[in-house]
Image (cartoon, rainbow, N blue to C red; front, side):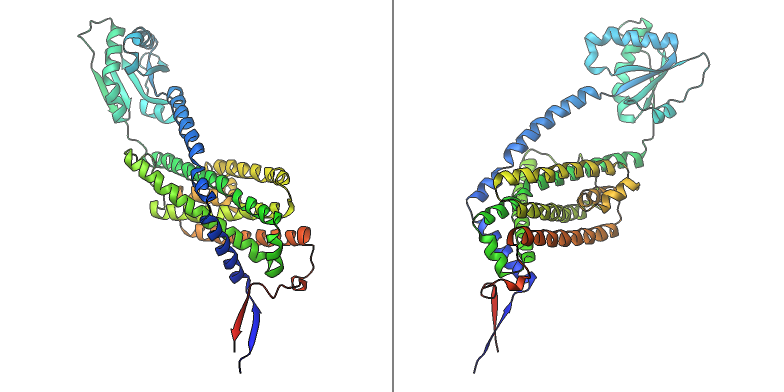
Length: 413
């Protein structure tokens, strides 16, 4: 004799059912193709804007040569540079008088280069007849010829008699250079994380509103715990987003390799590229789940597209403020500002990704990921309760009729 026992699915198992259902439905739909093509336009705009911004930066931040000489010699060098500009101006740096020296006054160009806040690449000291160029080796070797021409003009010599230029290369501070380049890596990682989150997180909201409109969400809520519905939808959309990122990453990597580009312009992050990329994927998932849980709560209160647009605006502004906050905190490592950015759940993924580029310690990332997972669970539970209160208007979940007929499993004894 055989008897049958009927039991409800657990929250985890029900969430997997919802995730598999939504993931399959979206991945094999025709709209997914347009979803993959969607970033092409913003990427094109970003490339154009980046090119224009680079031109502006190049024209606005040209390195200059400092002049530290007696007043008459400094004035002669400036006048000679101005006179030669129409002929060889493209190869000449801009000249800036750093110090007008008194007779027999001691001056240390190396210390002046460390203390200046200007875009000063090297310093010319001594006199036009006996110039000394102090600065990074590559820079002063490049400028040696043009500066000798300027000195000859200042001395009134003919075109074939150029004074000698002594080169005094400075030892670059490896720690400072590494910190600066790693900060660029951190900034690039934060920007990419922000753009991907902004681009992809809205899918959760549109999917929930669509299913609210055709009453599917109410059927699901009557059959399984609302927490499972929210978790399932979040992870389904996260899976779709990761598939899209994978396609874009492979395509973008192929284009970069075909064009001969690489990541050489970015310094190696403190934790190394393999772990940095792994943490980037994890922190994207955390950022997506955190903002997605907020969007689910917003979707539970919205009934029309107009309401969605109105209610989602604060969440979009929140993302912008979170990005600016995390970017500012990145420039203050170890400060209370950075600690606050790490503790605030929405800015934590951005702040921790920047820390991975600047600090090689691994254990803080494990703690931060656990902290973010805790907040994802709390936000999803808050959103599901808000949905039951505002939309379902139900009491205890067990009071819904027919909930044992759907999403049940049968065990045979």
